[in-house]
Image 1: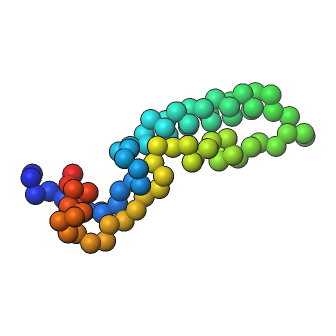
Image 2 (image 1 turned 90 degrees about the vertical axis):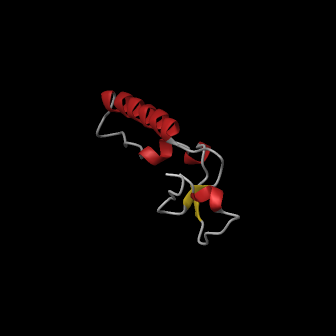
Length: 81
């Protein structure tokens, strides 16, 4: 296994490995807000908000992903599993 490499050369722009906790927290928050809005929903006067407006995606631990095109000794540490 010492020679195993990633199949796709993508990596997050910051040092955090996963966004799992952030996504779970935000999805729970959105579901809770929507549940409360739907309880008090009046179809004649109210408009349901978009889920993307309820969450600030830029507050996440990663700030997008980048691709490493070339495999060389300098970038070798990013290709390890």
